[in-house]
Image (cartoon, rainbow, N blue to C red):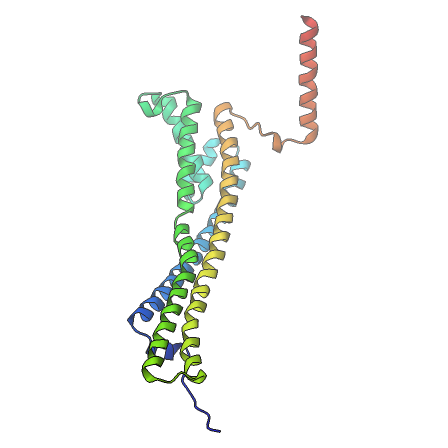
Amino acid sequence: MEIVQTNVGIAHFVAQSDWVGKILLLILISMSIASWILIVCKGVSGYRRNKNSEKFLQLFWNATSLDQVRHEIQTHGINCPFSHLTAHAQHAQEHHARYGASRLSEAGTQQEFLIRNMRKVMDEDAARLETGLSGLATIGSTAPFIGLFGTVWGIYHALITISVTGSGTIDKVAGPVGEALIMTGIGLFVAIPAVVGYNWLVRSNNVILGKLDSFAYELLTFLSTGKICSITQLPMQVIVGSHQQEAHRHLHNMRGR
C-alpha cells in the first residue's frame, strides 16, 4: 500500500492561503504582540507604583508635619497616586488660603474647594490607570472571531481548491481543512492572555483606587481639622471609651434640663 505524504502545517497553510488569510493572520499576530506589550508595560509600571506608594505612605504617616511631606515630594518628585493627591491637595489649600474664591471655579468654602480638587486628581489617576485596558478588552473579545473568520475562509478556500482538482478523498480534504482550523487556535491563543491580563490589571487598579479613596478621606480630614479622626485606626478601647464618655455627657445634659 502506497503512503502519500502531504505537507501540512502553519507554513504550508500560509503559503497556500490567499491575501485574505494572510492579512487575518498578520492582524492576529499584531494583536498578540500589542496585548503582550500592554500587559508587560502595565505590569511593570504597576509594580513600581505599588512600591512607591508603600514607601510614600510609610513616610507620610511617620512624618512629624506636612512640611516634611512637602519637602519629600519636592525632593523625590511625584511618583505615585498618593503623592500626586497630597501635592495637589496641599497646593489647593494654600491657594485658597492666599487668594480665596476669586474665580467661579474656586467658589465655596476651603473644604469644598479641596474636595473638588482632590476628586479631579483622583479622576485623573483613575483615567491614567485605565489607559490601554480598552485595547486589551477589544483584543480579548475580537481575536476569537477573527480566528474563526480565518478558519471559515480557509475551509472555503480549501474546498474550492479540492473542487477544482476533482479529488475529494479524505486524505485530500483532511490536510487543507485541518490547516484552516489552525486560525481558530491562533485566535484563542491571542485572546486568552489578553482576557487574563485585562482582569488582572482591572483588579489591581480597583485595589489601588480603593486605597486612594480611603487615603483621600484621611488627607481631607487632616487638612481641614489638623488631625486624623479615622475610627478604623483607633484601638477598640478608645472607641468604646469615647462612646461611653459621649453617653455620660448626653445623660448629664438631659438631667441638667
